[in-house]
Length: 68
Image (cartoon, rainbow, N blue to C red; front, side, top):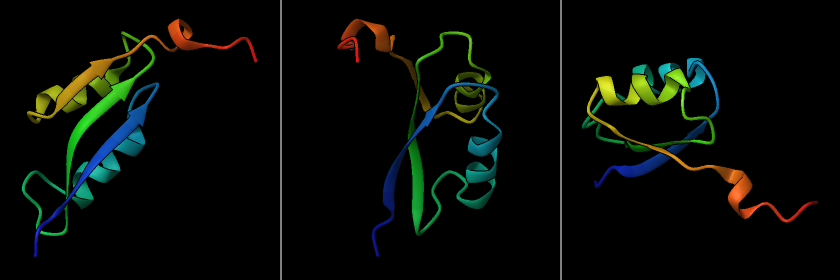
């Protein structure tokens, strides 16, 4: 069985991300977190991801905001 690849959206400390990392460590057989995205450049979640070798990306959401 091939593990599912998961991307996680985070905006702060990453406590939910940490829980997911503990449930699905790198190379888990059911699911693997392969990407973390945040709309805040200093979000600790990005650092958590980098610490375990997961790609971490900051994307400023206001660039695409529609004013809604």
